[in-house]
Image 1 (cartoon, protein in one colour):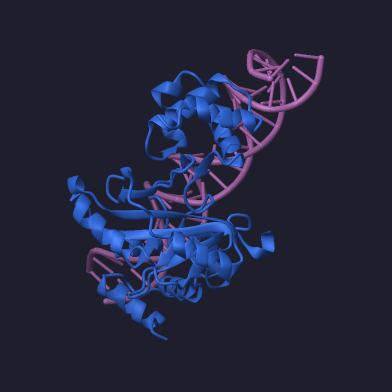
Image 2: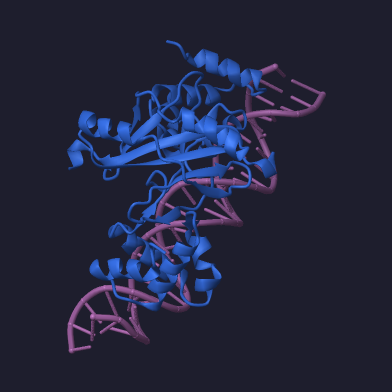
Length: 141
Length: 141
DNA sequence: ATACCTGCAAAGTCTTTGCCTTAGG
DNA sequence: CCTAAGGCAAAGACTTTGCAGGTAT
């Protein structure tokens, strides 16, 4: 396997984190799962449930995000974002990871072809997509 | 203007919603703003702050989502999702809007070109993107 | 030895609901 | 008139933090 737990632990060590039981178990668990997990998913996972506190998992995730080993998906605020669905308008967004400013991108979206393919391959219906670009805006950098 | 408040209100009426002051103000506000807004953004917006309760805005957004006039961005759970950042692996996701199941998509991501363009056009640095497809999975439909 | 981690419990923040009143159709 | 919508206040859900004690280095 290309990404062993051991090699990720090494990345953590290089980033200055201590090798603790909780860290090992967390990384193993995230590596086993092939899709994103919530804090609850992780803290209640059999690997972790009896082994460490939810606050520990939370703080580990925080550190791992700081070190760019873990990413939190979605817009980076706690609150939910809403947008109007207007006929003939599809919006993708460009978001500053630092100040949080969100702007709409006008560029034609290059994803529709893949979306069609997915519809036939996977049997999903009512497909739509969301595409967000994140980065540091000129002001913040 | 192509999308007048009036025309959206008509969509709402067609969908069975009553024409109330709060609805009008909410739609106007969302139409003015050209990027997604949080419940707090909306409820505290000068247009709405003194005019209606936050719970009202919340319930309006709910109804508008039911009627597919508004969309809530991001993964549709309350909790945040985390994923490992592994070298050489970029994942896009396919999510069932009904049961919430998330699966990773292997297909080569068609977005990198646009990402490069954005970097030069906008001056954003450290760009990356997230791409999610939503739909109803075979089991749920 | 000491700076970093952990567990527990409490506080915060944003969302969601109950209940009664108001008003649109 | 009848039912959907609104206001207020309280409850929920998930996240985040303070502090005292434990542990990797």
